[in-house]
Length: 296
Image 1 (spheres, rainbow, N blue to C red):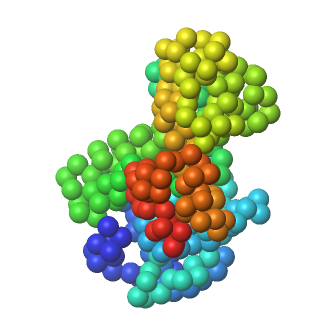
Image 2 (cartoon, rainbow, N blue to C red):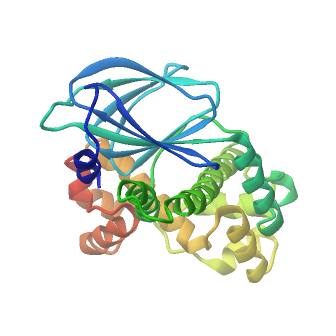
C-alpha cells in the first residue's frame, strides 16, 4: 500500500512530504521521506496516532524517550506534545512512509462514554478515561489491516472513504484505550496485586506466563465465579484469560528476541510446545514470523 500511495502522489519535498486526507472525525496524513535526516519535529495539536508503513525511524519524545519505530508498530503522541524524528535509512530508492491520524479529544470522550456503557470495569479501577499519553507498541495484525484499509480507501479514492475513516477511527480509538487501560491495570498489579479480584487474577497470570491457564484457580483467587471472571476480563481487557496470557507471552517474546535471545530458547522459556507452534501464534498476532521480526 505504501508503494501504491507513492505512485499516486508526486512528492513536492524530500523530507516528510505530506499528503492530507481530511474528514469531520479525523485528519489522515501520509508522510514520505526520501533522504536521511535528523531531529525533524512533529507537533500534535490533538492526539496523534502514528503507524509505520515502510522503512525505519527513530522517535525522540519530549521527555527524553527514544526508540526505533518500525512497520507493524504504533506510536501515540499526546495532545500538545511533540516528537523529533530521525530517518537514518531514507533514500530515493528506499523511502520511509508513515501514516498519522489526528483525532479530536471529543472523539476520545465519545468512545470512552461508549466503553463505560458496554464494558464497565471493576469499580476499583475506575471508569474508562480519555487521558492520552505517549504510547509505543507492536500492534496486532488486525490493527495493521485496519490502518492499511483506512489508507487504501483514500489512496484508491473510494466513494465511501469518509465512512471507512470514521468507522476506522472509532475502532482504532477503542483499541488504543483498551491498551492504555491494560497498561494501567498492569501498573495496579505491580503496585498492589490484591487491589481487586481482577488484579489478583492478572498477577497470577503474569507470574506464570509459561504455565497453562487454570481458570478454576484464577476464579478462586479472584473470589468470583468462572462466568464473572470471564466477564471482567472481557470488559477490562477485551479478551479471555487464556487470550490475555497469549498476548502477554508474545509481547514478552518480542522483548526477548530484540534483546538477542534465540527464537528457540524464547519459545520454550515462554511455554510454547515447539518452535512451529510458536511461529504460528507469533504470525497470527503480528503478521510476521519470529525470524522475520528478528531480521528487521
